[in-house]
Each structure stands twice: as structure tokens, then as C-alpha cells.
Image (cartoon, rainbow, N blue to C red; front, side, top):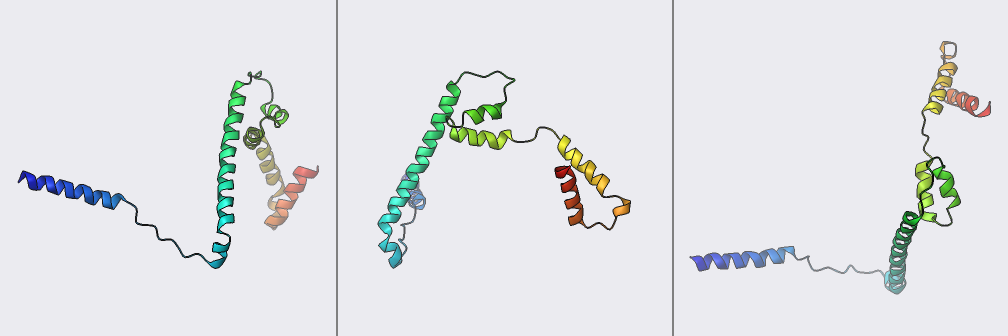
Length: 143
């Protein structure tokens, strides 16, 4: 009885191994155009992979250089600093500009709401939304 249990365990292990192996890959039939340009496509794929790997390497190098730079004073403008260092850190400066350009205050949006409240009133109840948008835009940008 113990021998039967051992054989069952062996059989299940081999069955599990067979289940875990990926099915044999079926090569899809290539069109004549794909067959003709197969070498060029393979070269393009490898060059794209190299470019991506080199991009990762460049990013890591920039981060390492940035970490090695001495800290600046707290009162300095980080966006201005990255602007002056964009030749040294091209990838990091691009990333920094996308995050440092966010408005830190709600004051401008509050002013637009105030202008909209003054523009759209009971006397202008028939004002179309497109016209109201144009009036508010012109009020905030031309005066």
C-alpha cells in the first residue's frame, strides 16, 4: 500500500510538470512581405531594445549625478534650477517641469469663478454657455 502511494505521488509530480510546461509554440505563417523583411525587422527590434536599455542607463546615470550634487538653499526656485541644469540633466529636468508647473494656490480658479458669477446673472439669463465662456475668457485674458 505504501508503494502505491509513492507511485501516485510520482505520477502526480510528472503530471504537474507537464501541466506547467508551456504548449509548443506554433509559428504563425508569415506573409511573403514579412518573410522578405524578417532580417530588417529583427534588427529594428534589437536596436529598439538597445535604445530602451540605454535610456534606462542614462536615467540611472542622471539620478546618480543628481544625488552627488551638493544641496541648494531652500529659498531657491527648483524650476529655475532645473532650467539652468537642463543640459546636464535632460531627462530629470523634463520630469521636473511636468511636476513643478502645478499651481500651488487656488486663488486663480477662485477669481475665475468670481468673474463667472459676475458675468452670468439674472439680467443675462438667456446667455448661451459658449458666449459665457468667451466673455469670461476675454475678461480674464484681455483686461
